[in-house]
Image (cartoon, rainbow, N blue to C red; front, side, top):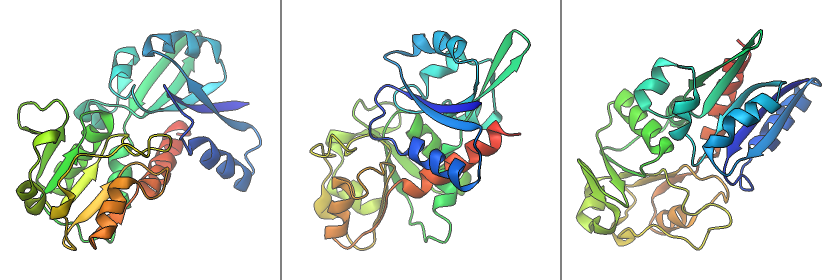
Length: 245
């Protein structure tokens, strides 16, 4: 049996297992299974790898996309440039286990925008691994952006201080935080949504629920909106290709 899976802290919202199980069914892959591995801290990863001898690869989600770097043996050039990993390939060479990290979030994000007229410049909301992948994609697409976070930092806007003018001047707004995820739908980003117009394009990496409070605010004001489901599917297929090289 070939095992694959998802590692994160809280996985009840994830569609990854159902996506891969449906893929296995459609493609007649009876020797494959996809598991969810909830771990309370990244320090538990080595024990998990040692106990799952049939594990060929896994996805990584919140909050471990950056902290997992310390536990990997190799990184792809994209993952090294981004500084975050969402896919790990497990190679077993005799008694040695080699973990190589990749990032398919960036390519999934870019491919999910195929055929879209992407406005510019952008606000990228978040400071985690997903935001890092999106900012890498922005640079590849040559779309100027400003990062927004709760903590602020060099070259960043503080989320609580984003003004109506900031929103007006940045028609592409991407939420890379888990705010609005199923189970936390009462959470809301503190943005001056009154400045949103039909010129805007709001993209939420959250896909469960399919319409988050962030997207709903955009829809109310005539903005184009997109959730993260297409990105999920595209990055998952990229992960599958990595695991089966």
